[in-house]
Image (cartoon, rainbow, N blue to C red; front, side, top):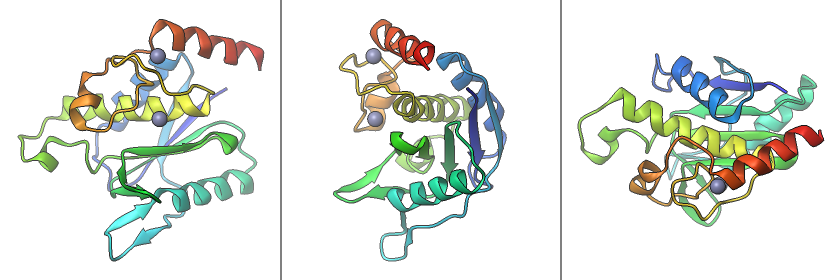
Length: 179
Ligand SMILES: [Zn+2]
Ligand SMILES: [Zn+2]
C-alpha cells in the first residue's frame, strides 16, 4: 500500500515534505506528496466554504478514472463544511479511500495568534493521519491523546499526540496484515 497526498497550490507552501514524512512514519506506510490533480468542486459562495462531501465525490471520480486503489488525502486551504456541521477540519470516505483536510482553521493566525510553522505542521499531520486512519479502517478513539480522538476545537487537536494509542496501533496492524 502507498499513500498519495495531494497538496493544493494555495495550501501553506513548504510544509508538505515534513507533513508527508511524519504521516508516513506514524502510520508505518510509505507516502508521497504531489501537487493536486483533483478538480476542485463544491465551493458555496454564500458560505465561502467547500462542501467536503462534494470534494470527496471529485476525489472518488479521479480515483475511478485513473484506477487508483491506494488512499488519497487532499490538503486544501479553503474552509470545509458538511451537511449538519458549520465546519469540519477534515472528512474521510472509507468505502472509496478518499479523504480531505483543510488548513483554514489550523493556523494560529486564524485565532489571532502569532503564526508558527511547527504548530501548523503538527496540526496538518494530526488531521491528515486521523482521516487516513479512517480510510485504513480505524474508528474514533476515546483516548484524548490518540490521533483517532475526534477533536471539536483547536485545543483538543493540540492536546493529541502525534501517535496512535496502543489499541489503535494494534487494530491498524491487524487491518494491514489481513489485506
Ligand atoms: Zn474522525
Ligand atoms: Zn486510539
